[in-house]
Image 1 (cartoon, rainbow, N blue to C red):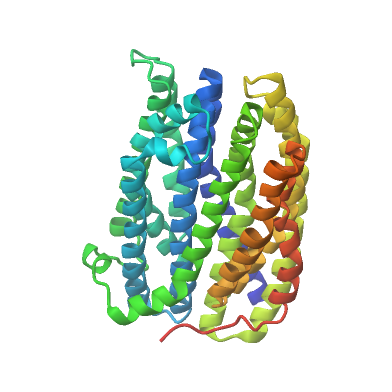
Image 2 (spheres, rainbow, N blue to C red; image 1 turned 90 degrees about the vertical axis):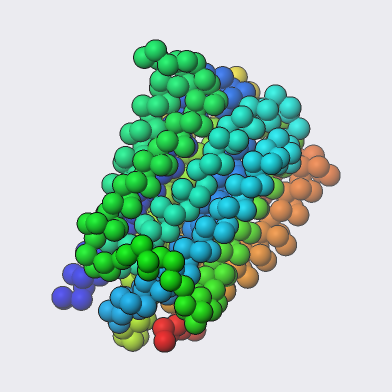
Length: 447
């Protein structure tokens, strides 16, 4: 009974806190989208394109965080805090390197990068104005998010929620005054949204630095620990962390290409995707948070070496994942017209947006089961390479080829192409059921 209480209390605490944090993080982008949607449909679509680059960065840094949580939580299960710090140093350098490369690329050729997503020059120009400023936030985000994942590995998750609240409050206020020119500020439009988001990311970093280095007592992390990367731990981390980074990068690039396909189906399709993408990211918080919570519990239990308890946990996880999928799917389907009503868009864009959200409501049910099973339980148990291989097969060998054929060869209706872009979320459920219940993914990674 004591273990049962620990499981449910720990899981739902992790899930609830990470969900609240992630919901607020994506709400920052949603706030940009909604406010710019009332300012200009072109501005909204341009920022939607630019946010695909931000989404790629999030996927990559989240991969870094997955490796950190997996290996760090196993050491935390042994209460080896010195090794947790060494794992973080390796993850820190990886996150900073990725963010620096992406910032350099989009700073040098913003219009060229966004031109890969759409051939509408007006929308690309608006997106380029936004991304030039947002590039300065990439390193800031990498540092703050890696520290939040470090805290997650040792079951201190509230910091992520608090920092996200700070970021959202700052972002909404600055969006209001900078996009529209209120309270004596100049009307900056797209640039105002970018400046607001950049400042909110800086505020987020300041808060998390204070928490980790001043307030937090589990690790007592020092600045010197961050830069003290040991070769043996770097090797261990890269072995565990590179597959999730590769999986995140593959997923982010695939989303980039999906946007490129939709971006060549007309202005209504671009606008509908601009409406549906941020909404889906917010709904997806439910299953990504389930992945994070289950990964921490799984990795810690593997580190403790308690296989019978782990098997009990996995059965409970799957029931929770199915319930989460049913609820999130029903909520999104019920609210789809209400959501579209917040946007001042054309009639064609409005109708297509409702259709896109209906398709997403179907696919999210599959996502809510397969993603936590594979990204959470299987990766958390030590088999981080499987998810990468699975994503490559489904996304690059099935989804993207069929979607491209639908859009450019067979010229099927836009909703058919959009469904094909999301069908892997349902097909992966078959793989997840088989993989997660065989327990061949359990691997002890600590020294």
